[in-house]
Amino acid sequence: MSNSEQKQQTPTPAELPFTQPNTMVRFVTDTGKILPRKYTGLTAKHQRAVTRTLKRSRNNLLAL
Image (cartoon, rainbow, N blue to C red; front, top):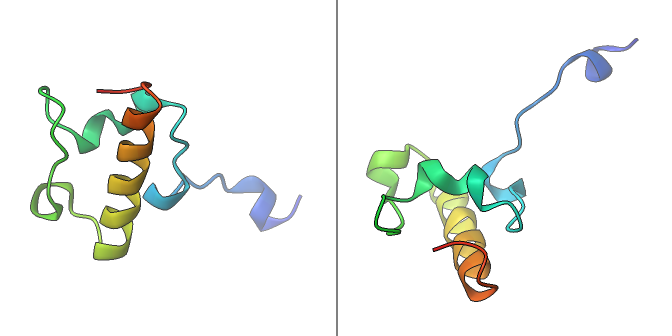
């Protein structure tokens, strides 16, 4: 087994699937508002990806 096979990395926010809204719970409030970078601690690039994914999920009626 090589090193890459042993390590299992968590997906970056840009790689989170929009079809699984349960994985996005930590990026929204209980009322459904997207949390800002100040609270999520993400980079600007990842925050934009999370926002894009959440909005795509909402448009497909998968998450609130």
